[in-house]
Image (tube, rainbow, N blue to C red; front, top):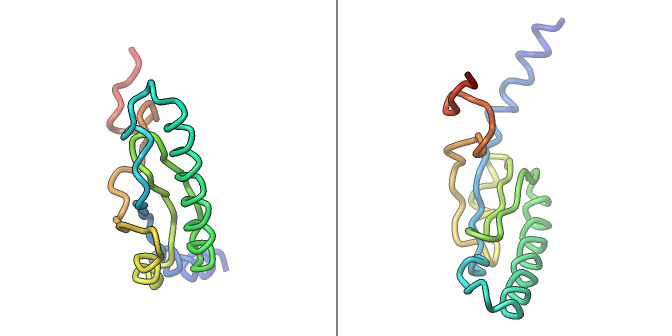
Length: 116
């Protein structure tokens, strides 16, 4: 029984993809640090755009994994592969690209040196 359940769930995983959804509002780092009012306004625009796009992605079956706002205005999501073209057509989406590196800086993994 356990083998049948595992075999049945494997195709579902293959049908989902991890992607970065790059959005149209410029990232926070595009403004000088001393422009606090402009940065606060930009951060608000980024948050509103991310909320709006994520709501639409959620309707396509996406699961949110992360949000970036400072260096890049992007959402990391797991999305059904069949919904990729629909995701690319959402207003405010500049691109949808496959996640290449899953480990964050400082995370343990093969790219991190072992403690000695």
